[in-house]
Image (cartoon, rainbow, N blue to C red; front, side):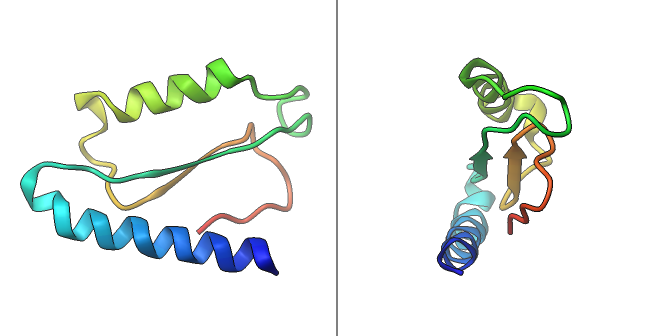
Length: 81
């Protein structure tokens, strides 16, 4: 339950900041890293999560703003807002 409340709070803060700063060219995105050995059959490494963050820092991610990105390798049962 606490995790769900936290995720909703982080999602709301992310969206509010994106709405406020987006018109100035600033994108705000939350990255939920996770450790998993489920869907991809192994744990996601810190370097793989860093690749996601690097992409989000690049101009190629201009269409992503105010969203939650989950870098968990497809962990089953987790829902991120």
